[in-house]
Length: 262
Image (spheres, rainbow, N blue to C red):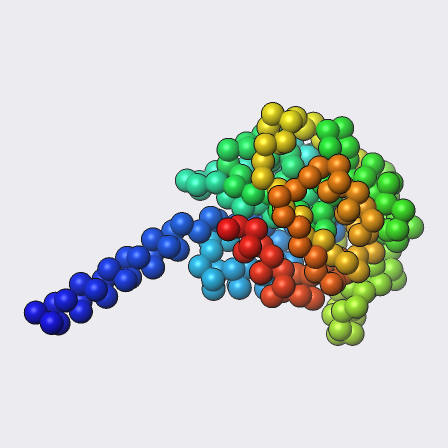
């Protein structure tokens, strides 16, 4: 009888643990411009170890998700994310880095009931009618502008190779600074210059969190604060990093995402 009681208690504990894990929302990670889903590898591993289901989204128009540049649009990005989260029975936590903030905003507008929280990581947080380029033009402290090279004939944007380490990996270990330039990829131009359509009734109702990056030279702290002032969020966190905390402060970023998901 004692052994049976132990078995029952053990089974109950396991069921309780499974139920707790099931209560955690799925976390969908959306990369930014000049990146693909591999940026999240370290973050994904830690989130999964903590019991979260993670969905890594590759936006079309890059080597990991090929599509002709002239076919890539904000609508295509939106639909790609929606397809990735469509099978989830509960609302997800949707994390967007940099340009990924534009993408997750269009998803929040299209399907607000699917989103538990939209988390903006060093991300563009737009208002109706804004685009990444229109927001970037407001960023008095960003150093990214002179490094961008636009090829209108190909419909692509690239980052000057020599500027990549200083822009994206300021404050990072030297090994990462040396490796990073070869990890940056070219980006379709269309979504960057296209304004988004957002409404208070849909996008405005979605819970939002912002993760600031205090040393950012791409989306500067000035613009991050300006965007949050224009579109208030429920929670704010600050990481003492440049633009790529998923490589330079994985634990700090994971902690902020998990607190956002609570």
